[in-house]
Image (tube, rainbow over all chains, first blue to last red; front, side, top):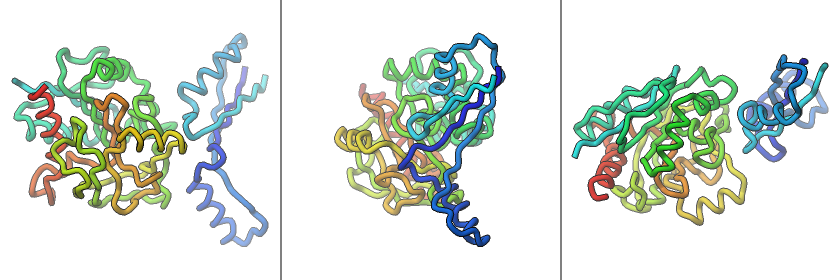
Length: 77
Length: 225
């Protein structure tokens, strides 16, 4: 089973990288970009019987740092 | 009494030797060297140091991989028994990722790697690491990091300040850290994480010896225990 984990900074946590990219987009002349936030995608190939609880545990223990990051698990089948 | 310290080396650590030299200078005893994959720590340790560097190439997040290495389970156990643990720079990131200290170290607000000597204010001069400093005094210690921007939620920051667990603050905020925090203590006071490098200020040739006081404080605390 393919699983995609999307890790993003929590709202309110300053994202200097996103801010720099936002600035660069403006510099390229792209108007109307209100905000840029940069995250991380982790693609996993796991056994089909991997439980939701196990996937959540992987995120909490390693893939995301829940002090500063949220995560979302997408099962791609 | 011999001072029995250990310096943990992870793949990508690069300040482990500096840390060992600083500990030996302060104590007269060469510290033991421990590899990240070792299953056990040497027994009867008086002090454990997690050095700076780029453990595991900063994969995933700075310190995240090292925090899950076999030896860290032993470091957690030792800290629970009260053994002093110092994490500097990447070592601080490892302690935060391991949940031994609250908060997280994010990319510097400027996005730049910073490498210079900074002024720190000693906020807590009662801990075993800081007893040799004057409370409220200013010391000069080098920083060299890309991910030193300390973040914790407001409630955690209030608690750290209320409990006197902010050990050091930047006199001039170097990296965007919340409330200028440069170093924090755990609730028991035996774990200190700090971004600045005290081991790089232990010899007049380094430009100052303010860092030596930290190691001497820890050794003094052991002697008087």
